[in-house]
Length: 302
Length: 302
Image (cartoon, rainbow over the protein chains, first blue to last red):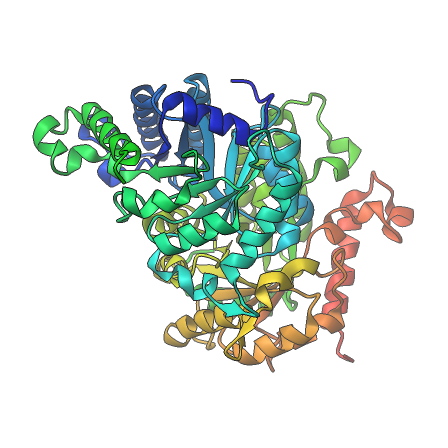
């Protein structure tokens, strides 16, 4: 549990221990929560308590089976300060359950403001005590380096948005000049940092977010960034398949962690889980959907 | 105070009423707080209370004299949930004092997650009740549109990072392909939305962050985005001068709001305010530094 080893090594150890590269995103959504968890009142504090209970129960179902969870900050922030209390409580519960916590907040800023974000979210001495966080690179290298430096000092990780899973990601990310696209420029920056700060297995503290929905780019970026862990969103509900993400892994099956949020959390709301478990059996649906995702990701015949 | 008019019109009205385009950034920093405000204890809740008191006092000094304040989310988030409580309290105080509140959190995400951020932060029905927020555009157009739509519906604003004030901003923002730089692409996207949704004075709900430290780009972008409010950071402590920001305004002196954070908040710590007021007179230093900034911005002989 302690953060005495570099994040890249801790992540590899957890993936090897669990035998899979699946990650579950903790995205509590009002309109999708099982009805047994919906609050009586409609105040933000009521919803925050529902979100906390929901995420705690999901954590109990997935603990020991996967390496990491990814709380989505937006849904907690939407509820105001009460939501932030719930977020802190969810992070703490996940840590206690032995899960690595990668906060998906896509933070970004410059200089000492970036340092404040990094110091606030990363490591045991921070207020939020996450293992890693996602950051957005539009501001440039001097906005990323403060995150990288704090992450390295604290044995934590930073996943930089490189090529995202949404249909509109190309607008900026695919623009090419002087032989390199924007996302390749970001990729090179991330990889350059890792080359100087790699852990035991050759991976560094700076990771890359690369969407499951762009398999060709995923493969090319894997080749371009051999020392960088990938966080791969877009699996399941967004359309990415196990075949699509195959190119994200290294020769040892490491180097990428694949996220599913809605596809796991709200499995009770779709076939075949709806028929098998119903809404009351939403926990069993989470469990079965996670089993299916893991089986899918670990198929040997790909 | 009510949000019954479009944000762009409310901002113009406030700038005209105050007679200047200055904005003060609320960046509470541990190492710079006047010693009378430093907490006895070192727990996050102790610091959060200090931040709250400091920002409340700053708000009392600047209220009625400027149109808006810009709380920097990072410094509050650094303190964990206690910091978020303080942030909510600071936003509320600023609203009560008649100031527009532009939250500087540089949020960004896609689809329903972006909607969660926008709904959480913008408008009277939201948990945080801000008038506007800053967002980062790396994810592309489908990450900005949800923010724009919620902002428009709620008579609020969204300031998109276009050309930022930091030295490394060029790494991505200045990359040019097919005759347009990345920041020009973002600019065109913002302006296109405003063309369809302009308020009484011709400005729309989508704003642009354009740094004071790049005067030439500021002028070019002003021409490129005639219907877009600019939020101009980098004035003062980051080196931008009144001459540098002159190009940000339209023919009526509207269209831009110029931010200073450290230069105002911690004026007590630099000449000539240190000599005049000392640390105990930090409030008077805030007031005098704001006077100087306003005088600088409103000089007629530029």
